[in-house]
Length: 187
Image (cartoon, rainbow, N blue to C red; front, side):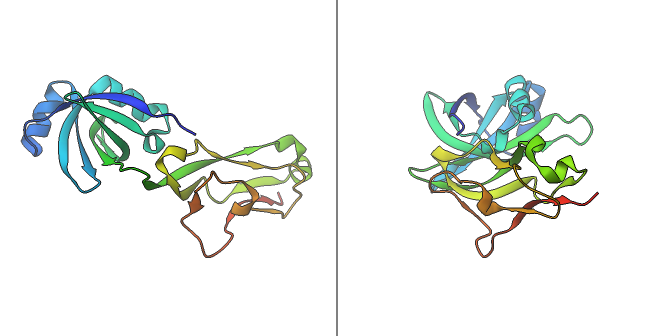
């Protein structure tokens, strides 16, 4: 499970395209915190800190305590925009989290014990169908990744979502079937 991280922010006086450009000229990234039945709050983040967080990975599955004017807002990033030319962050959207809230997140998939799979030893190929799985999960229990064990899998075997233990209270957004995560394909 990921830990709640701290993030310092400044309140922006105004919103809109011109105000956002001014914030970027000051070396900051414009952002907004919305949701939980409260009015949106326009904020700005330090460019270096925001850039590090985005490119470090797991940004969209990390819960933050955003500190604005001494008050802490518990939020999770929902989206971010990057410049098409420089890949610099242009804007970040945060979703405010209420008490006991559940969020929809995409969690990456990892595979272990490649060497213990007879199918892979015989030249089979791990065909990954889903690199990430969308889950509805309590904000306090967002997993860093879902791990699937390849031990004993032979050629033409299939790995389904039921092959891993999900965190307490988590469920896949696809609920009508036991969907495929990966297969061991014939070379």
